[in-house]
Length: 236
Image (cartoon, rainbow, N blue to C red; front, side):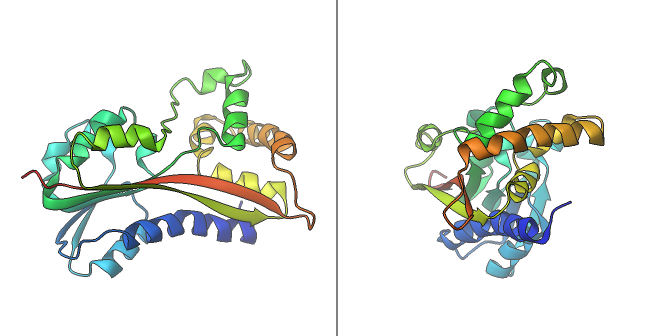
């Protein structure tokens, strides 16, 4: 159960990147909008910006790769969801092909690969005590250069940037509770009992002080790196 502080930071972690991504989209004429794996809050933010748009929300796993059946869209938007899917070259190319002329693909995805907490998490997950639970889990975190290589084959009109969102906590439990709702969530979902989930979280918690040192006033800074890109279809 998240305490109030972790809940507040969690809401910011989910909402602020979406707000920042939407603010950079230079397109007003959006009537058909595809939201990839988005939350209700994502949908609300998008509807507030493009009030006349018809928003279709989709879980890509349910399509079995049949993206073309979705139709054509003026905007395809994804906030912290594509990292749950493999083969980003194929995925991003397929999503780009859904765009109408001058349509926009806008994506925010975590880049947790080198974050200390993610390194700890994956190290623990490889231990023989845990590894057999996580055979189906694959992380899909890539540097901006990787996405540029994909996108530059599709369009010359693109924006690409990174932002480190720094959350401030005063207890390690708050940090691990936040991470349990984001990058740690697939691991916890793979564990069959509450006891195992609690034990796994406890192991991660024990390692945090070695990598996340507290400030003089007791504050604990937690940088969370996000990669953004916006690509416009000008080829039709």
